[in-house]
Length: 439
Image (tube, rainbow, N blue to C red; front, top):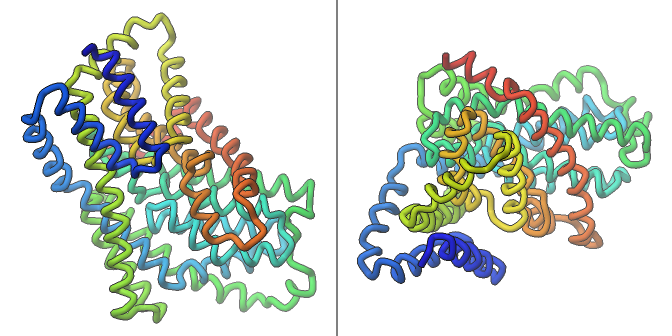
């Protein structure tokens, strides 16, 4: 069987199983095992087992369960609620101020958790009822939460960056440093978009009534800033020890997990029952992520053994086109996959194929890695299977349909495309900070 025919059969089979509802990790593993058996016989299982063991013992991936624990523990404390209250007090007088505050809090949560779900679910429960009560347009209210939550996949300590670093064999610390400015730029673009729309259409995000603003004293404003202390200290401790070279990302994840417990204790939200629930939820989410890693590893190993990287490399090398056109084509492929697959599945499928091409074309792997995750952030918002769309559906009040959620995401996807274009046109947005910290 030719590699071309095998490629078509493997990817069509994967898409069919995914659309049938089979979890992507099991679909990838099943296809890899079946094709391995057909092509090489039962002995192929003995060659795939060590691959699973090597992934499960990868030191870099230890950071995933620790950051997942940190995110879940912070979600159970009232850190996010205090953050929202503080920023709400300072921005409430602005048109669209509550939506702007929501993006700001999501940005901080992203730097605390490394997960998209944490910011989306937390702010969906805290901020959405407040905005709807104050007559905010539901598209602005829902869209800003989903877009702000998606920053968790980009802003360090992003678990997607950890997975990319582990499988592309590049420095996770450099990836973290490279992702900071793009993450802040995207958050700023979201805020600018909200501010412009609400400036010209005040009914989309009315400011707090004058009489309500009059009841907030300057003493209350400055006192509310206490809610920023714990999360900012935790962010500084985790990222600081990574960028200073004191600890690896995996070791820093342990510091973050311990710090989240301290935050919960300080907020008087810690107890054995909460610890049990957080551990259980963290175990479930970590297992889900690792099954995708295992399944994708089997799929990629079989596909690689067939000679796929050489096939793709030879195909790209003879294309009579500019290398930037190839880069744009890759971004389009990632966007297309983002509409169909889970982000980690996309990482596992494309990294072994894209990284050799990127190196041959002379692009910096750190720049491409962060650019990849900037693009992948869109997959959390793009229909039909964007993860944040379904997180939001589970918490919106009755009367808000899935169509409303889809429509609210579209403008923010457009803003993300602008951010992606900026990072492509100006590579130093990504490369400047890693070069300053690590060279």
